[in-house]
Amino acid sequence: MTRIALVMHEPLGAAFAACARHVLGAEPDLAVFDIAADAEPQAEAERMLDWIRGHGDARDPVLVLCDLYGATPFNIATEALRQAAAEGLDGHLLTGTNACMVLKALTDQQENPETFSEKVRQGALRGIVNADEACRSSSD
Image (cartoon, rainbow, N blue to C red):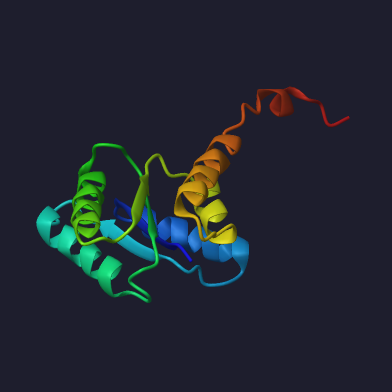
């Protein structure tokens, strides 16, 4: 089964985990790497790589959800996943994480990481709705 990690600017990862706990009514099965403003990127990448290597069955693929493409958490995740790939470990990275993505990832875990990654991405897109019409409707 694909393991899930949130790698985000502090405290966003913890907030998404708390949101998932609230919605699902249970502790979510994911790792949170909240990256502090003064974090040392290489040390954080090593910490994440240790999780990829040592958590559960190291053969299980990982799906990493980041907040912003190109930002420090993304760069940390990219480095950790690059090193993991060099060791033969399977990892996937999605950015632009929203609550729909996190919930989709937690409720629709699959064996095929490529299909799973795309389903999580699609879940994020389906969660983005222009709700102007709902705001204009009268409740008469």
